[in-house]
Amino acid sequence: MVQTPPEGEYLSSGEEETKVVLVDSNFSYGILPLDINEGCCPIWVDELQNFKTGDTCIKINGTIKNEYDEDYYICISAKIYDEEGTSVGYMVKCPFVTTFVDSVDTDFFELYIKHDKRNIVRYDLVVNYISKYPPP
Image 1 (cartoon, rainbow, N blue to C red):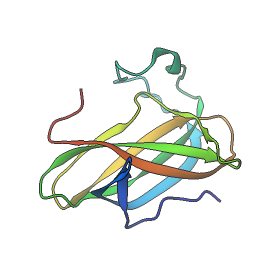
Image 2: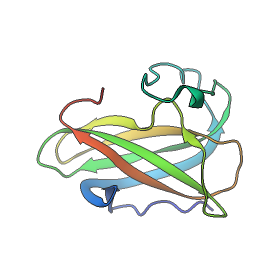
Image 3: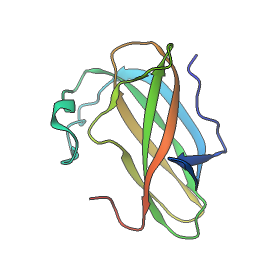
């Protein structure tokens, strides 16, 4: 059983707590979808772009709530850990996913992590960036 981040709690941004609440999240093993190569992040490290449709991966999706007084673009990333507590895998396409969330509203996020084993015991979600403007 994979340990999930606590629902209903604020996500952190490094050492700082945010006003972004994790409403729910889901973890599953799967394969990368057909459209995975669309919109790849130009700043992402080239040697990590070693993925293609059909590769095995981990999919994490869920809902977040923006409890700020303003609408924001919220960027989220995940880290997955094996039974030894080692962070494994890497995010596909970009180091984070971005979703626009109106003030005091919720929105869905979905991210993929390249990893070819079924040895994950937990994952963490982190807010990387909060802004009124989309990331570059």
